[in-house]
Length: 116
Image 1 (tube, rainbow, N blue to C red):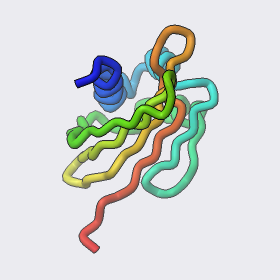
Image 2: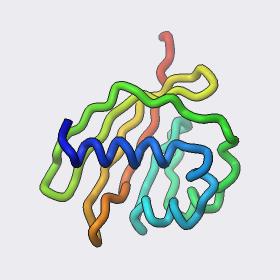
Image 3: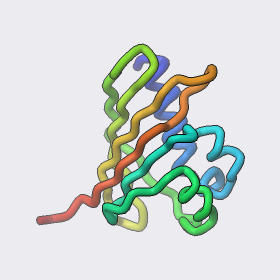
Image 4: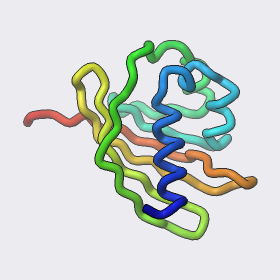
């Protein structure tokens, strides 16, 4: 696997861990200032919204699988994968950008996978 893709998968896994989800300084380091997210509810969230909810995600770990990557430019990558928590699978997509010497997430979207 490409080293950039390996690094981004590692960062996705880190962001999904209960330890990091409760660490505001680490989240600030991993998300761009203009970060945007569309949650499974369809509601948009900013970086500030994410930081304001630290500790509210519970301590359950996510199971991540089926990663795929698309290089959008020399400094941006689209990552797609499946995440499951408490038996509920979701399809996820994130855009990572290389800024100031590190990879940071600038966009994330989550959609529920249903039987319908």
